[in-house]
Image (cartoon, rainbow, N blue to C red; front, side):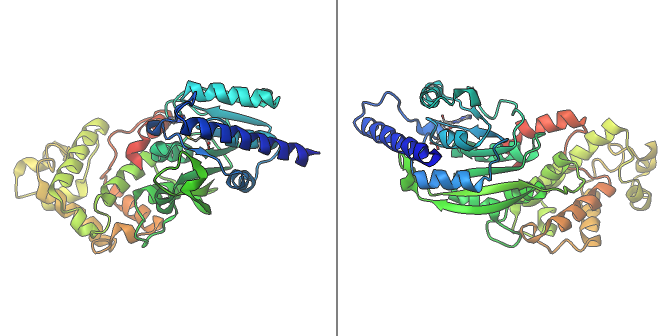
Length: 365
Ligand code: SAH
């Protein structure tokens, strides 16, 4: 019985999309699909079914879908989930979606939020399942993995290259800041490749489905600090850390940051160092019990030396960030932090940091 209904729905879907395809091709479409909004509808029922199957949806689950479009995936999700919450930016899409869902009598289980998914606080959900607009992949993945929602998994259809970068491991040529930041808190599983021919209109790029699983044990690290640290390390990911931390512009910036932080926290930054290194070079340095700006602040060479010492002490100076494991990167960050060198601007209460992480996500990944 349910299979028959399923088959009928599939046929209806196919008819609907044939019609839509013809209309689009004849330029008579009531809806113009916008490239700028990443509007590429997934048409292949086999791919849609596999996405749903691989998501392991329970009948009690609330599924969050980003960018439902005309509802190809939404309709399949509604067949298995208790509830679907869809966030869609385009009102025209929402109208079509409501209509199609109502035709099947499924409207009670669908909530549509007509907004920008990046600017909306996510509601509670168990799973995210979505064919997202590729233009917002980075911030969206960041919002998923670093957001405050707890979730079981996220099955996402992404641009193939982006998926490959997410899946990369240390030492792989694609391993970069995106992978290192996401994989600190989540495991990423490859599900399948999807041909560009499966979409309407056909995009220029191929796609892949991945499944993101939040890690059960997450290292104890301030995420803002971690992300700022990896941003610094991965600016030149294939250079050695010794070379990366020799760049003058970056050192100046980092040094300035310690200055503001030192003032903010009224901290004794590098006290170990200026006691030993600075005593006879400049008498003023030993005054003011180690305030950063009055002692080390203006001395780029000394700062460089401190950094070098840290890198050497951990055996990091000849290593390349793109080849380091999370453990090694966490060790290095901890060495910096022990020397009171920080990478992120301000110390903020947890709630604010989370909000910042979510809203600045584009910069993080
Ligand atoms: N999931 C559908 C449609 C994918 S196209 C399918 O598989 O057929 C991507 C959809 O995301 C479009 O409907 C587009 O309007 C929507 N979208 C684009 N930017 C968005 C944003 N910032 N927030 C929410 N939805 C967005």
